[in-house]
Image 1 (cartoon, helix red, strand yellow):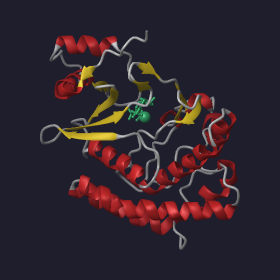
Image 2 (cartoon, rainbow, N blue to C red; image 1 turned 180 degrees about the vertical axis):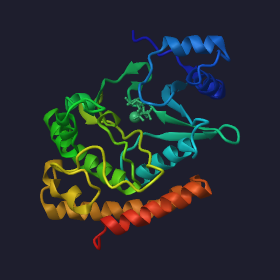
Image 3 (cartoon, rainbow, N blue to C red; image 1 turned 45 degrees about the vertical axis):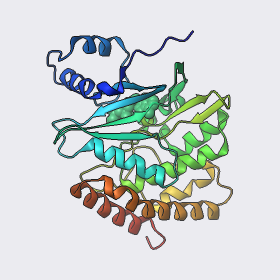
Image 4 (cartoon, rainbow, N blue to C red; image 1 turned 120 degrees about the vertical axis):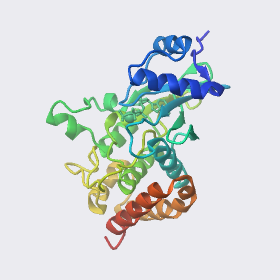
Length: 291
Ligand SMILES: Nc1ncnc2c1ncn2[C@@H]1O[C@H](COP(=O)(O)OP(=O)(O)OP(=O)(O)O)[C@@H](O)[C@H]1O
Ligand SMILES: [Mg+2]
């Protein structure tokens, strides 16, 4: 029998967040049992503190905002993830909890668990055999969206996953998520389909300072720039039959991203809403047909 993950229940989310933050700040335990459990379960990796919470059969990754954040990053991540879903892309489900006035937390449905069952996942960094952060030039060159699309095909994922990956690349460009490194993409072994699939999208968060001009992964051979031309020139490697098909897909996706902004705008506070609205306008002008 598979061992159940020992996770904290959702109703204890507040206590869990307090403990995760205390650990991040090297402070003594608020709740020593909770701390013991946190240290006994393997960490998820990534730059920011996180933990897992259980709700029935579902496991959720919990990422609290930090005191050092100048913006509500948990809210920004939640709204962006919802935006991706509303635009028709396959994003991990999220919930947002405001905890107090200046603190909030996002939880993201874990795609590597189904009840007590563990779903095998592999990061794109492993699949592409690249190191992240890159240790040599070859790592940056090999961390590429079209190459990842080809690897997906090679491991038996269906053609729609290549197209989905293309969509995520475009979405990252439009919202300005330039933290799209190869450990922020993954594949999973789908137990029902008995084949590898691109995992749901996760950790999609717009850069909050300047509008990024480039992504971390190559959008086409030798190109990182967020431009219509660079994103479309290797389109056949994602599985599009023709360049015209890819252009149509690109344009309808831009429209869906633009149209769905109104649905997620109410989730945001005034400052974030203004920032994302401006980002969207700039990127649409740059990436649209006129751009
Ligand atoms: N919904 C999910 N289901 C399963 N595993 C996940 C999920 N979201 C993230 N992970 C895993 O946890 C790791 C850390 O999560 P995430 O990338 O969101 O955190 P982060 O600290 O913001 O990362 P980064 O270092 O990229 O800024 C990911 O690299 C991935 O392996
Ligand atoms: Mg990450």
